[in-house]
Length: 257
Image 1 (cartoon, rainbow, N blue to C red):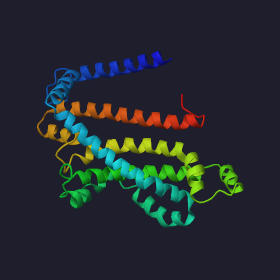
Image 2: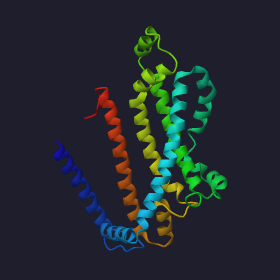
Image 3: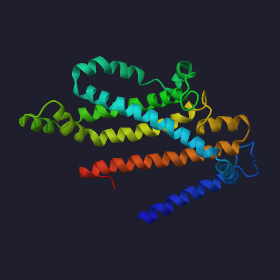
Image 4: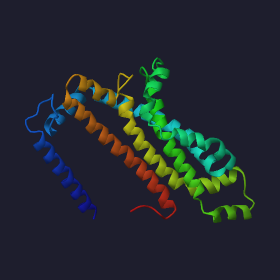
């Protein structure tokens, strides 16, 4: 079954490459490039060392923004799900901000953080957008996880006179963790998608900057090459989160096959 899955996946990719080649046959670097031009563009970026610098910059920003969203979003989501007064205080604000696209915050982020220098100019504006893209799925997942905890766990804790922080760390968190991890996986995917838009304005490095800069120079082979790199890294990050999620589920005997 595993061999069949890999084979079918390779066939699907091969068919896509074939259609891509046929559709773009005869195109040059200033048009939509074919697979071969994209591959040569990728080799050009890699050989010059620029690609690795941009990959590091992009991963750096995503990890900072995502980590900050986890640090803030998980406790806020747990509190909203557990405390009625905190839910009434904070949830209307969360639900009001959640529908706003992170891209809509781009002018505000550039205005507030555009002049702040850190690792690269305007790093904070990109990190801020990634933080916004990540935090609301995390809060929603954590809230739903707490609200969906089986009441029998809480009754058992009450019978054993377990309360306070002990309930949080020994009952609520273990029961909610699988759903929280699913939310983290979703949030990381969204953060990686938003990264490209966040780096198209106000930064001087990263894969999003590479796409924008190559477009301005009519090097569409480099544009698509950067898109391929984004896809590969995104698949890798999702795979890492999937393994973490599956590991947590396996401890509960509900691992995905």
